[in-house]
Length: 152
Figure 1 (cartoon, rainbow, N blue to C red):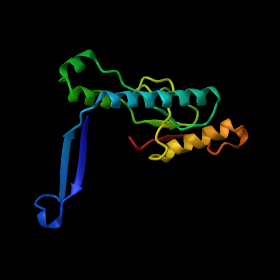
Figure 2 (figure 1 turned 180 degrees about the vertical axis):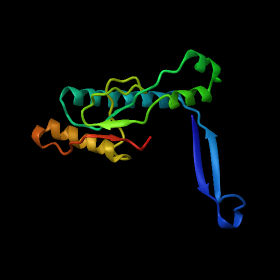
Figure 3 (figure 1 turned 120 degrees about the vertical axis):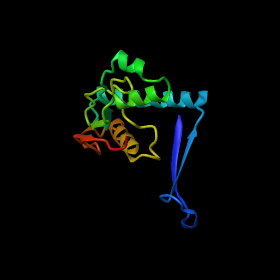
Figure 4 (figure 1 turned 30 degrees about the vertical axis):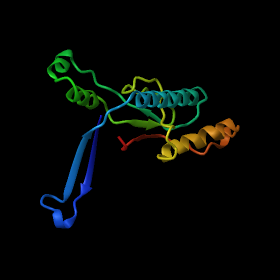
């Protein structure tokens, strides 16, 4: 994993465009990988529960394009192949009914719900689920159509 941070440089030290860019490699430890997998599992479980119970949630989906074996073989291993995988996916689409799979993650249904303190969308999932569990089925807080997500 890489971290890219951009900082404005102080006016007295500006020699270029006024920005300093720092790129650092981050080492991912086993604990970090476990947390990531458990968050994906929790998000998938919530999406499946919502789907089974027809709860309108911001289901996230993504289509992927097939890449030929020749293209993969011609792409250097490492970050270049990772970038090839990223570029072979469409923008994330958000819908209220969860009818599309998230091919980028290889999941039949997916919502983001594990960071309600950081993301309002996750908090809205919590509100919606709690309302459903309280039996407020006809008075759920949110209903929506399909929108393109610009977060990714």
